[in-house]
Image (cartoon, rainbow, N blue to C red; front, side, top):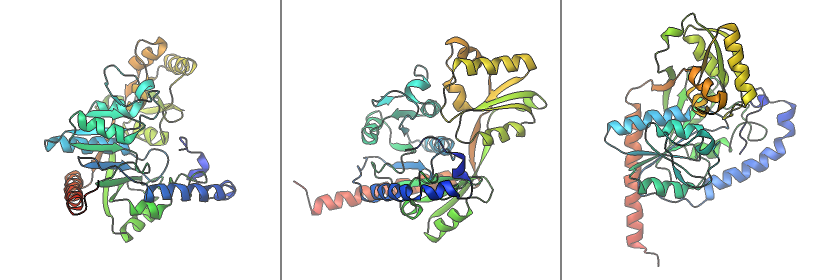
Length: 353
């Protein structure tokens, strides 16, 4: 899977997208067949998948965190299942936020592990089994919608209202991971984040397919009122840095410099030194995202210094309808009960040797 989104993916289709169309057709056929025809493992606990249609961030991790909090309020023990993108470990691992580094397990799993039990695994079935063994009674998958490894009881697809699905083309001509009609057939509901209009065509397609619709916004969660009027240097290595820079402006801070890095990027020593030196020379406050902050390693050269000086501007998902998280969880649990009942009935009527 492509990890970085080239700029032309988010523009009106042009020559490059057209030239890559034959490769996209092949990719789409393979990805679509994989989603629809693969045999999936049925976990003994409910599985809620948080995915998106495209390569790049749309708000999956904040959504997963919000739903885990809702699950915990109901007395459930949610467990996050993540591939651990950006980490070096290739074995199934329970994430310890106090001891693991982002270089080992990935940045997003470190954020998830602060909220609930988190397991990373490149073999999703093995990861799900580990979560169950660790006591999870609800699996929340952060991504993995297109992996075709587990049976989902509910698949919530997140879409950003400003970026939508870009030029609408399948990888590599565009950011779409598999043909949209196939993805919609596997989707339980759509969650639009934001109030812009780029996602409208997908919202209408989901409505025609009878999929439920939810809306939410990305809001600052920390106390950053002290930044009002403060000159800042903002740096971000996420899929959509502009989203973060807009959030910085919303604090009332004066955004003097922006520094963009690739998604999941680990800053090199010269990059760290440049950020620190500019901030020192111009009297700027350093601000960054929670995901970038956890990638900085305290006690390791100037990375620790940057981690100590940078202020995190944290964000969280807030559903427009406060009842939405419970509605999603209710449907997930009901579907899981029906799945287990159906499976039990099939085994009773037609036992396998």
